[in-house]
Image 1: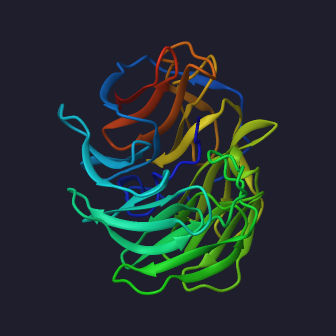
Image 2 (image 1 turned 60 degrees about the horizontal axis):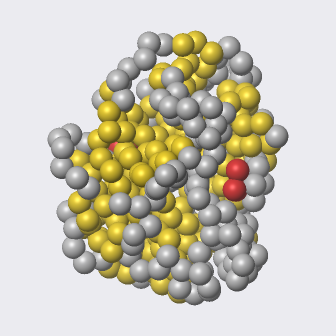
Length: 353
């Protein structure tokens, strides 16, 4: 079971706050040349009790949802194990975001009308329900004033919960942090999954498109065509551009201006990315599966040669070894990996920068 739709780089997280602008740079097509760098030590920071469905971070901690029904936090420094923050109702908690004081998450069960959007103190404690009666709330993001999320819509009884499968059109919602009624900013968000924010707009990835709507609502614009949401990875916005990975026969890392225009391939023929994040003028991802699983790669936001930051850390195959997420800050990469054989083993690794 693998989810490659990542939510850790929404506005309000450390990476979101440290994006560097790339407006005005010359973008060129992706290249197959890959520069190798020296191997660095990879160390296990913690073991998770179950599969991790969503992860984000701030300056001091990682926050993640687990399939044991809990939201956890893990200090970036030290040796303490993950700390339980709050339990969540339902089967899956697939979206997570943080601000200065709280962690926000979406959760749902099979069936219609059981999804919720909730908030809890970062240090742990009781959660507050911000919205309920959702079908399949997915990606979530926060700014100073509001919470935003993707509602996928109702799913058929036999839908694969790992890959969406919503049959009715969903919507993009916003809600003041102080409470109130959710406001639909855009309808017909067809099987939307990941969401990102800048100062004025909400961006999301849906069935075959990257779209935008004003934070105040109105007409939604299509910025780029994309692949099915089951074959996409993350969506980040910085310096007037959006970045994401997608599969269209082969995987690539792409970019488009937030105002629209032609999309650009920054890295072509890449192995399946587990996630895509941006830091310091470069995009980073990790190979999720196959013979190069665990390799961390990067490409400049303006295009150019790929760099292997870290080579594969183990031989792997689709059933036994998977990288689910990679996050990056100024000190380290944080990598979520699991092995399915001989028994499930979920590890959060740290790689110093």
